[in-house]
Amino acid sequence: MKSSNIGGQAVLEGIMMRNGDKYAVAVRKPNGEIEIKEEEYKSIIKWKRLTKIPFVRGVFNFIDSLVLGVRTLTYSASFFEEETGVVISKEEAEKQKKKEDIYMALTMVASVVIALGLFMVLPGFVADLLKDVITSRLMRTILESVFRIAMFVIYIVAVSKMEDIKRTFMYHGAEHKCINCIENGLELNVANVRNSSKEHKRCGTSFLVFVMIVSVIVCFFITAENRLIRTLLRLALLPLVAGISYEIIRLAGRSTHPFVEILSKPGLLLQRLTTKEPDDAMIEVAIAAVEKVFDWRKYLKENFEEQ
Image 1 (tube, rainbow, N blue to C red):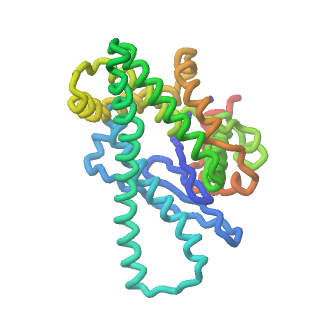
Image 2 (image 1 turned 180 degrees about the horizontal axis):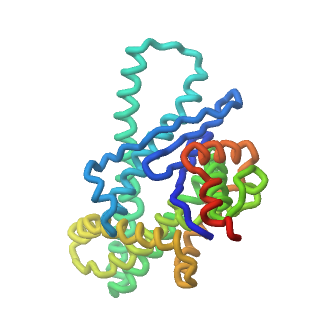
């Protein structure tokens, strides 16, 4: 498989595909039509060099992904809000847009805080409660790591049962299938995409799994006895954890080395929960998004014409 630079994300009844600084959102509207929006993404990081430095770029790329993800999710949701039939003035629309921007920022901050509390702080707190029972720091660290990973998996399983999330995961599968179809040298059409894998090594799910694994290793070396200091040190080292995880997933996307394949297995296994088999209508939406930002015919010609 020859890696491409295209990446994506599922949104409400649609797909966002990104290639470099250009992204497109394709949404299946309630009337059945596919609406496509294509734009250039302007990073919130003004100094571009920061997004190129190894072990530093991961943090800023993650922030950009969060911002773009919430933005495209808000955009896709707007089509279903329009179905109310309420007509508003231009001034009201501008006020609503400002409110949505504030809501987007608050949502992103709240999501990060909740995730840190649930998956970073809480497991350490629970492990500390067992300090009198389990005196070995090594065993408490292992227990904390197991608890953190278990909570993450339970959370994924729980949300995957929600009907709206199931459809989002189906679009997530369509996104992966499109990328795998292209990277395996196949023409991008519904039949080929349907027969492609719904798991991909560069997926955000795999990134989160790497974050979990790397954080376990990093946290082992934090030996401060005071709970507050230990928690603050762990939070301070999160950018390092994210940076390392980003480099690993970049490597995983380009390499077929057996060791890299083994590293990728946990993320691919978890993707069985975060991706579902899409229907043909969802695949059509994913193809529409890909074709707006990526010349797959040129890619196939350059990488597979001799095969």
